[in-house]
Figure 1 (cartoon, rainbow, N blue to C red):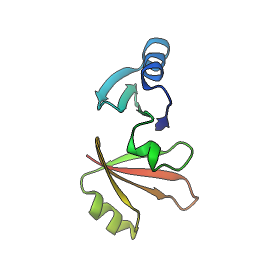
Figure 2: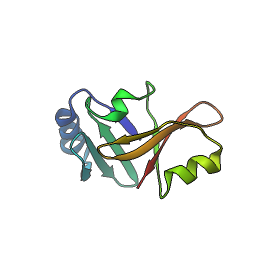
Figure 3: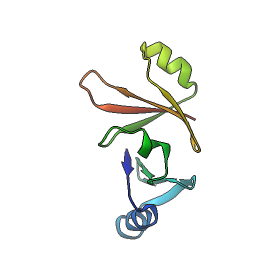
Length: 103
């Protein structure tokens, strides 16, 4: 799950101090937290996700090869090269947003 946040520090502190998440990765404008089997991505206002996002939450799926994953899906989604990596946003058949992230 990814949440876009206005204050990355405050959001990170809230999830760690009040809800028991731990920091898994920190890429500056993006912090990945985890708790049990849940991975939560927090994206601050300076991230490419905030600049190119669809309003609302999204599921983030890591893929080894973003270009191939998009080709396999028959998608022409725009690939964004951000400071934290490459990603593209697609919709599932019901219109729910999925982010494919190249690991």
